[in-house]
Length: 256
Image 1 (cartoon, one colour):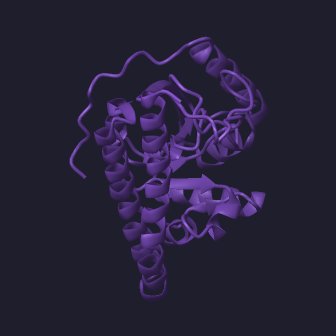
Image 2 (cartoon, helix red, strand yellow; image 1 turned 180 degrees about the vertical axis):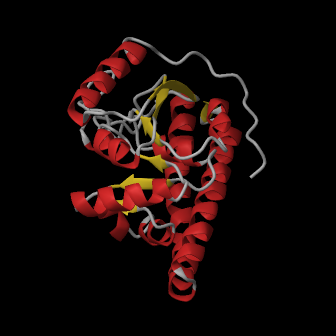
């Protein structure tokens, strides 16, 4: 193995291990706060810690030379009112990228992650929404939006199973129609498939990985959820088809 490959391997797996350590360290305080705080206060604290923790984690990856990030377009979403944030989902880091820049959105996540020892306690404290019960998920998502918060929801439902995106699911249209909020597409691009659906963890990525997150088209609340998901699918394919992220400039994050 080339010396550069050895260094890339060390940085890659150190970054993954650090994420696990951070999550485990937050678990005892998150459990305690869940027991002591009323629901609204717990949710606010949990989401604030998620933002700050993810912000710090991306800063560590940047300092390690493992990644370069261009995320500043997300900052313009602050204060724009409730909406569904709908990114494509090429890798496991996508939610970290988005939540590191935004204050307090709700997040729909795989139900199994709520029992994960690294992520579960923090996600429950933050009041994130599991996807195991469709009716409950829609009701909770709509309630968050009607209370004035945004909602992070990956329309593919899982990491992209095809290039440039996998099949879209209709749930995003159902929630947007019921809550009467717009859908802001978010385009995530990277020059590596590291942590994608088909990535072999034994494979060492070439570092630094460059991530670019930009804002796509904003759709009005749909009248028909099925027609909308087809329109959304066509848009993502058009916006991302064959596109690769260019080298990202240094992008100093805002103060947490």
